Length: 470
Image 1: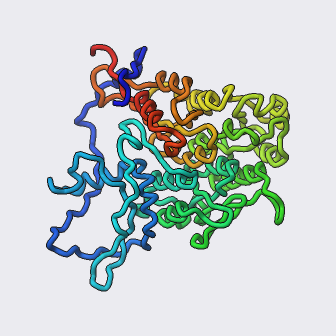
Image 2: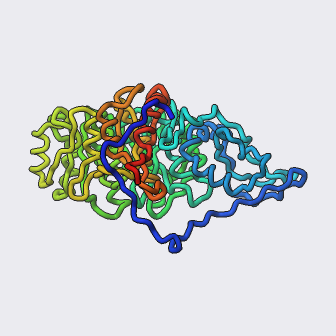
Image 3: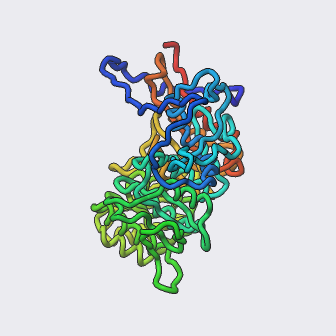
């Protein structure tokens, strides 16, 4: 408990779901874990499962300790350790490591990377009962952590078919590329540097080990704009927004990603999001929605529609367009221009980035929008001045507890508008908490971005509350 006065729900919310007949429910079965061999008996070597993951991946494991905590819980629960087992300790366990089994060595013993870990990211600084932090210091680290949280990659079935590579300073391409995380493609985002690939991305690639599939047309990855392709990753389709020797055109890259989306999905979009080129904080929530819905993101200048965007809209002349951001970000004249192309247009907006994200979270327009106005949802919380973090976190909006992006404008405390919103959708119960709905918040970034006190505040607002005397 972080605060002396708990947050109290001021209206009845989320009364119990009607009781179900327990006899009709079948508990899901979990794969059995192999029993541990006694200490005085050598373990039999296991068949090889793949190449060894470099030891530096342990750093990624530390970053995603809480993000993939559910895997650790499953493994520990199935291990059957006795009272002397370290897993029975009452304190937080060590950071998990992602390992790949090796072929036996010359002595017949199987080798795996050492069970090292970075600094423990345990409760309460990085995990609470209603929040989970992805605590990287950079967008590349957070993107790698999110990718491994969504695709743990312990088995081939848990790996993505491909990855999306974007330059680590290209927030526009990163937001547009988030659409590829939507089913059926489900491609997570990783960042590259201008001359080298960040270590976090390299190690995530080694663990994810994409092999391509029918859904990706056989490609193991897609590199956008100026993104550098690592030598270790062959089978990459490169997509640029300009000719040879020309500067990258962000609007053209987004339009090309929209074309790629149509080709891979095999169907036109149901809607299109038009986001501002010059206002990244207003554009950031588009990434989460694109990953959730498969609706592509195109870009507009404040007072003009780029030709690449205009051409992309002409291909889908009757598809509804939703403009994200106020008139100060995309003017009414641009909306009139889009309507002239034959597209119905609606604006989703708030006066500032925080309220703009909340407007999108609440919006419900004929199948478009999150429509999150009640309890029982996931949320992603990031800084409003970090559009790369918003793009890095987008896969969390298309997996797990699927939910919208919320923005905070400081490291210390939640904005009053976000606090009010989370209180409005706060879950509650009257008699049976196990039949209630629950909220969960992913916190993106280290404590320089969002302090633990703000995380604790979000945890309190997401907490299931007792309502009445039932």
